[in-house]
Structures are given as C-alpha cells and as structure tokens.
Amino acid sequence: MFRIYRRIAVTAGSLLIASVVLAQVPTAASVVDHLTQALGGKQAWDNTHYIRFNFLGRRTHWWDKWTGRHRLEGQTKEGQHYVVLDNVNTKEGSAWLDGKKVEGDKAQEMVKNAYAAWVNDTYWLIEPYKLRDPSVNVSYAGEEKLDGKTYDKLAVSFGTVGLTPGDRYWVWVNRDTGLVDRWDYILQDMPKDGPPLSWRWEGWQKYGNIMLAPHRVQVGGDRKLEISDIAVFEQLPDTVFTSPEPVK
Image 1: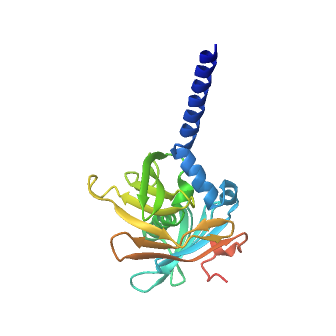
Image 2 (image 1 turned 90 degrees about the vertical axis):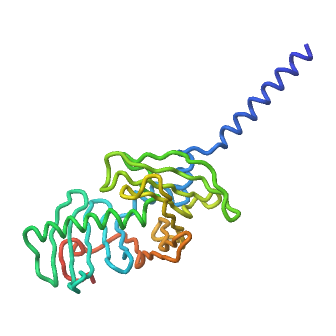
Image 3 (image 1 turned 180 degrees about the vertical axis):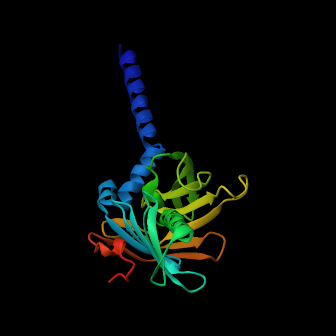
C-alpha cells in the first residue's frame, strides 16, 4: 500500500512540475500580452485620441485615431509647402500647395501619397500596437540572448492588408521590460532569402498614457532614424483637420 501511495505522489508531483514548465513556455499570445501591458495596456491605447509626430524631419502628421482624420504637411523637393487633409479610413481628402488648393489628378495623387506616408510612418512609430490588427499573423519565433539580455522573438506576416503585404518582420521583445528593443525585416521587394535589415528601438518614454520610442539605430551600420515632435492630445481644434491654415 505504501508503494502505491508513493507512486501516486510522485506521479502527481511530476504532473505539477510539467504544468509549471508548460505555463512558463512563451507563446505568441503571452508575449503580445506582456508587450501590451508594458506599453500601457489596451485600454490606454484605445483611449488615445490624437497623435502628432514628425517623420525624419520631412513631414508632420496629425492623426485623429478615433475617426481616421489626418493632416500631413511638409515641403516638396521644389520647396513648396504642402498640406493634405484626408481620412485614412475613406482615403478621401484635399490638398494645398503654398496655400492654393490643388485640383484634379494632382490632388488625387497628393492624397494617395499622404495615405502611403501615413501607413509607412505610423508603422515605424506604433508597430507594437498593431500586432492584434486583423490579417496580421503573429507566431513565436523563439528565444534569443544578446548582450546579456533575453528576448522573445515574434515573427510577423500579413494577409490582405496594407500596401505591402509581402513584408515580413521579426520583433524582439525584451523579456525583462516587455518592450521592443529591435526589429528585423525583409520587405516584399527585397530578396526573400537575403539577410534582413535590423534596427534598434531606443528612447522609450511615456506620451499621454502610452509608451513610444522616438529613436531608431541601424544594427551593424551608422544610420539613424528620428521620429520627433511626438505628442498625444486629448483635445485638438477641429480646424487642424478642416483648414489648411497653420496649426495654432
């Protein structure tokens, strides 16, 4: 009888250890959950209304995340000041050059380019918030150790979404902080079997109630990419999205 009880106890203990080990094995879902909490939580992101930022010193975005309204302004290669007021959900809008409204095909081209700039530039800024978006495929790509830190890697691919659905990304989530320290990518127009490009994400800080990182540094290179003038607003004048006049 003693042997039977002892065998049962050992078996139960083995099952308990196995269940603990399984619970600690990272999955795509658990890593994304960890990342989401480190960023401030899903509710903080959902409650974020307006975001402004400048991409590479070239152009400034004002984005109403709740409605899709968007303002883009900057300078053309010819030195003309442009403003595009569009909606990234409907992809409709209007454009101005040096204060004069643009009409016809040129206006349509500027609105189209403004949407493409929004897709590209916001992805560089808020990609960690978009891992749960529809048609985004996320899988666990294993553990990496680098410079004394442990990372959980997420492989990201896309269905029928975005302008370049053939792009592939690998997101490095710091196991201690829960934040993204790096991403690697192979874009759809790059050789599929070639080496990915890699950038570090640096400077994480709080804007409003969410975390954003303004600095990108190329791994193995000397290039830097700056996302500046970042701000999160609870309220903005309606004219930001309805008038080409300078924002006050």
